[in-house]
Length: 218
Image: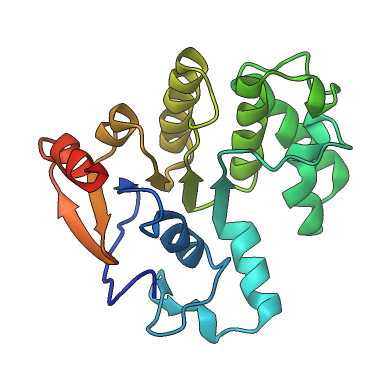
């Protein structure tokens, strides 16, 4: 069992980082929170609702409308351009194509990608691809944003830019943000830090963040 008797509470409009050694279960916890994986025991409540008691269809609809995902390797669809990738969650929900297109253009412009909407995502830099992924995660104004190592595949300059944009746009949509990261600077930008160790979760102070990570790596 990767995670053992974990109890965590996340609040509306707060940012939380999850840190710990590789293999300790950070991504597993994020996938459980994001309803991508089902827990073998216990419950996960979203806005006081036991979401895993729902049908797969209802759960999928909830995930698409209420949760935005940002992954380390973006998981963009390589056969589509930037605009189409960002539009996809809206189209899957049945939204009108013109409305989805207008919203996607506005987000891409906000994220500094104006003029690159029609480019195939394979022609973008790593930082630009991650900004497209960020726009896709936010297109439906989710109440919860989950980011798994969002800067881990970027150089330092691009990573810092994506991190600043992530927090700026979170403020814009008033969403809660949970980030899995090895980046201590990124973790220190969040309101709270949770450390995972031997399957358990611990609330850690920002002052104790470096010591916790170093202790885990030892």
